[in-house]
Image 1 (cartoon, helix red, strand yellow):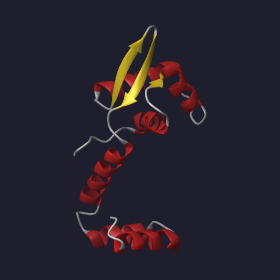
Image 2: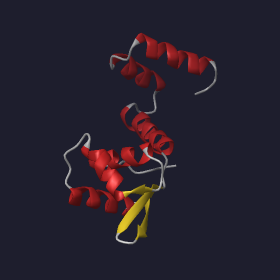
Image 3: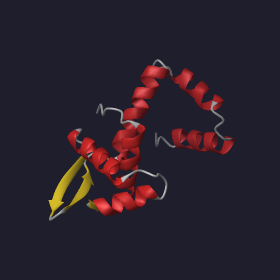
Image 4: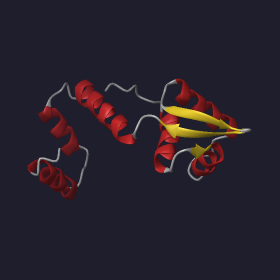
Length: 123
């Protein structure tokens, strides 16, 4: 599945939605985002509207308020963006990806876990 890449601000809203039990009231989205970002209410509403327009969330009007349900899972988004990264930046080369991963400063423990997952055929 080819899911388009989201700008950071929209991805931040999606991260909030993915972390909460849907459907998520607008007020809870705002409250959760404000714990980490000083976004204005109007900005959050604009980001939610953009996500709905792009097909990432469903909006259900409930009186004067709205609730939001993610239509794209975190896992589907991550898989799509990982594939894009692999193809675009690594040229589809496993060795280039492994080298970039190693050069990124990933810990030995993380590399060992990756090795274990590969050996167990879980990747």
